[in-house]
Length: 237
Ligand SMILES: Nc1ncnc2c1ncn2[C@@H]1O[C@H](COP(=O)(O)OP(=O)(O)OP(=O)(O)O)[C@@H](O)[C@H]1O
Image (tube, rainbow, N blue to C red):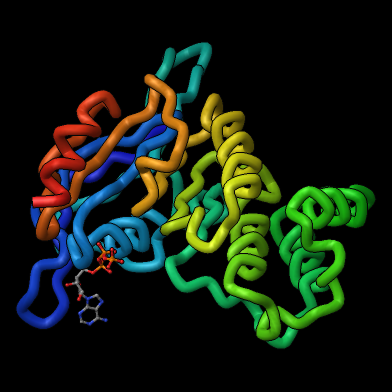
């Protein structure tokens, strides 16, 4: 699986929120960082197909092995892409009138968890996310951290091949952060994981991880996480 952006631009009124973005994402974790207003959420919404580029292209391809033709890259359709994306938007609300349990069950069915496994899968996620005690509470009555965990569970429940998470660790305590990070690390062996975060210094990184530094809608750095210190210095200036 690969996501490739080619000279992507996105503007609102006269302001370019994304300016000539060219890059590729493959399996593994990429952390997207940048100052407030740098365009991180806009880039993530675009990767999650919630908005379309006004210029340039975004292509999602998968490697196909064919006995006759050999190996080639096949472009996925929008329907195929949306089926394999898990997305946590910046301000997740879900269906605020539904209870936690009903909402997660509904999402589990919708995302193709086999019917006979839905109950067990949901119970496990709620238990491990410390949400069992509030499973009959409506989403609108949850605390910020509880709602964030429901948002993470809906994004991760079917182990998606593409996972796009906007500030996923916001509001979580340290134990919960470590729990979800472990899940993401395991998922990253097979999936493309793109995470925007302000909390990079508190997150345990692996040397395999990548870093994308956005500045005023442009890519200022995209490469190994080892450049984090230099990039963080840039963020503080
Ligand atoms: N609906 C909108 N109308 C006008 N401007 C907008 C809108 N949404 C975003 N912007 C502007 O676009 C720019 C990029 O916003 P975006 O939310 O992508 O940045 P960000 O890097 O995620 O910021 P933050 O770290 O503060 O969440 C900002 O200057 C923001 O003010």
